Image 1 (cartoon, rainbow, N blue to C red):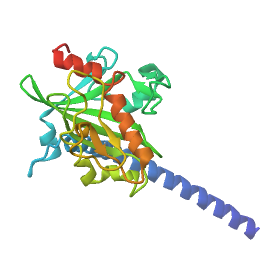
Image 2 (tube, rainbow, N blue to C red):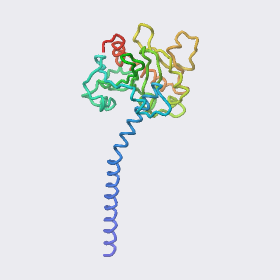
Image 3 (cartoon, rainbow, N blue to C red):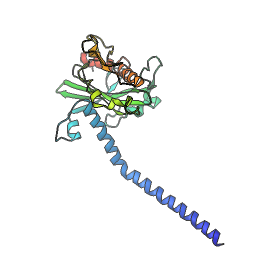
Image 4 (cartoon, helix red, strand yellow):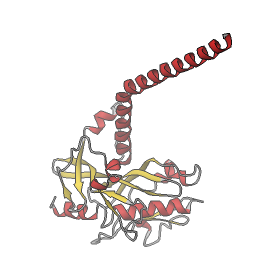
Length: 258
């Protein structure tokens, strides 16, 4: 009888302990969620500012981000839209929702993303009506993962200000070198398009760029030992700056038709 009592007590204590732990964990998750959301938003802003090359000692991320205007682009029309709430819209979630995204044909899906959100946020740095810089969200598959980042362009909508990835799972020391400041420093000043064209030429090459090459303005040093990641970066740039990405929008922006 004592043995049975002991088993019952053990089970009772175990169940109670599980219930208490579950309550504590659930409560912690609820209480910490606002802070997690705030941290995620702060990280997003930081990565946008970094890609745009915007920094100023003594100023907070929120203070610096105040100079950036966020708008939503309808990729089908290539124009700004109010179809979704700019403050709450999540393009990554939208891309996974068949009702809010487009399934890409294999021949068009060079970035290997499968589905593309119908609407994308863009971030503008303006002086009055004049666009000084524009920051574009980009993503595409590398070797092991989808790389998510931001590509910033000067007001000419062609010259690169910077590129940075905030999420990926590429191999450290190889494809993971997309995070290397020295490699990211190769991007500013590069040209996405040739004059008069909206076909993106910017890409990574195997080895190092020859500065005297006629194509040097459109080339970036490849990632050593990471051919597939390098190809992935080239493909995501070509996709997002091409006709299925932001190219129609950028053309409309140049023509003042947005």
